[in-house]
Image 1 (cartoon, rainbow, N blue to C red):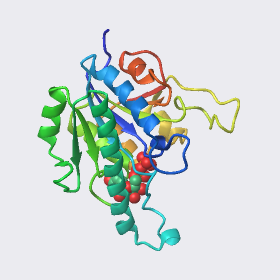
Image 2: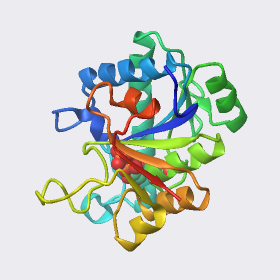
Image 3: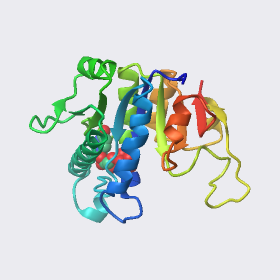
Image 4: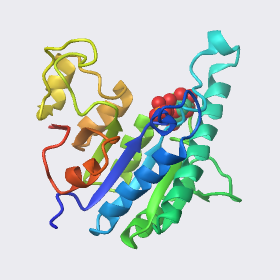
Length: 237
Ligand code: UDP
């Protein structure tokens, strides 16, 4: 099967790992994702993953938690490492070689983030999971996804979400909302469509890194995206 992208950065939100639960990690979701990821690695596609932490901790609500923003953000980053470890386990169970790299040093459980090493891993067919976001407070894992994608020269960033693309309006609220197959970065800005936070989005736009927003919860969708089928919405320059 021919592939449309040789090297991908897959961004998964922490919340997606909850499945139908209110909190934490659903092992069914992990094994489903592992299966989908294995399918694309089997085609020779090089895969790196950035995973969020929102299912465990989000650091941004200082007023609610009483925890200082930067401190909370570090807690959020640690949450992404927990998710990364769960995903790593699931992938290994499925027979996929993996490496977990953390932007915050935790040498007993993850390699430190080293760009050239990450690139070598993906060249060898290992799935690299990037944990701890960017390693800096005041950022998001979407920004970590854009940053790492650009750093490792990924062809595209694939943002797995609950909805199957970008719509003219919120499809969960407006029945007349229509899906875009393709849209430009500038159109997203002029139409005020929020795909990622501004920092993450701007990084992609300035470095001409295409984004595909797609529904990761439909098994087989990842394979479709990678083989160039029209799934989700493609954002490009
Ligand atoms: N975070 C951070 N810097 C980063 C990435 C993440 O401070 O580079 C923190 C931030 O508090 C964020 C939390 O980690 O709320 C979890 O990440 P995010 O909310 O992006 O996860 P997702 O929404 O994808 O589950």
